[in-house]
Amino acid sequence: MTQLTLLGADAGSRLSRSSGVPLYRQLSRLMADRLDEVVEPGTRLPTESELAQQAGVNRLTVRQAIAELAREGRIHTVQGVGSFAAVPPMRYTVRAAQEASFSRAMRAAGHEVEQRPLSASVGRWPEVALQLGTRGRLLRLVQLRSVDGAPWSLTTTYLVHRRFPGLEEAWRNDASLYDWLEATHGVRMLRRSRRFSAVPARSVDAEHLDVPVGAPILLTEGPNVDHDGTPVSYVEHRFRGDLVRYEVGLP
Image (cartoon, rainbow, N blue to C red):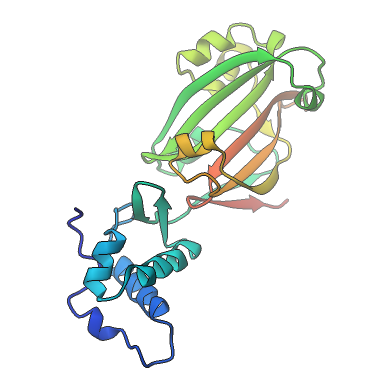
């Protein structure tokens, strides 16, 4: 049983059944006001039954109000767990020819970044290989990135396997890919282009990013190059749509 009382003692009296405004919409506005006033981002909210009792309405009305707040991005719901006050989206700026170090950029902005390796494999991905100008095997690295303690992105990076011997072992030891390439090979990666699209969360996204299957995911993908313009890697970031706001700097 949650200890949070989201709605005040006068909640029921503030809802009018004769105003012409649907009851669930009145309730969603009341809940939105309380979210701003008394609830910290990330806080778990009362259950539908508890909210229905606090507001003096039925659970269907509460469910409709919650759905409206979820559409607005004010709360997010994890199936089987509950609803939570949404964390405000964090801005992440990208520019052409910008150094492709996510961790450095976020840490420079004052955020705590954690990177957890999930898997490393060698194989053939023909479409990605074309982007990297090779027909050889690729090294595929998958990692989970968290910012300020919250799951942020599921990132997949492809590199030409024969070009960077020893990388797989170094990466498994939690070395920064960007730092390792610079220190070991003198390679500083730059972004060349990025493609953005909205996609539904897969089961693997839901598992690692703490979102429901089907929740909106911001997919960004594209190549990184060195200072000579030679392709170094191809990256795919699957960001939580409720946490990330991209800002693209134009030339």
